[in-house]
Amino acid sequence: MIRLFHRLARNSSGAAAAEMALVTPLLLIIMFGSVELGNYFMNEHSLVKAVRDGARFAARQSFTSYPDCSTVGTSAQDATKNVVMYGYLSGSAVLTPNITTSDITVSTSCAASAGGQKCEPRPRAARLNRSGKPCRRRVPRRSCRRAWRPGPR
Image (cartoon, rainbow, N blue to C red; front, side):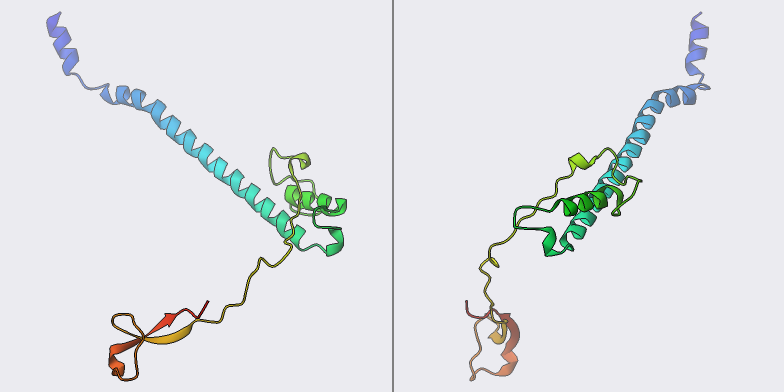
């Protein structure tokens, strides 16, 4: 009996099958996980593209579609929702799965002013010496280099 046990312990003919049986569940989890990850990124990309196309369409509408700064006309809302859902003003093939028109919100925001932006003069080129200070006329030109220094603020 002991001889039989030693002979079975040294036999390695089924070792590959046993190792494969142990590793197969892990390989299947990795394979299906990568498929699901790819599916997630594909759905996320199609959703972002659809929303971007809808925003681009809404931005190209005339001012009559937006009576004031906070409301959007119903025709502009419906058209924008159709562009997000179908890719066209009218269609039947849904580009964004699991999303209905009730999930889409069209809103506007207006800026009251240009944000207080002021026109700054362009930066002017100045000659600086090696220590970063402006060159004087008495200093030889070879010790100066051209650099950009911002204009007055």
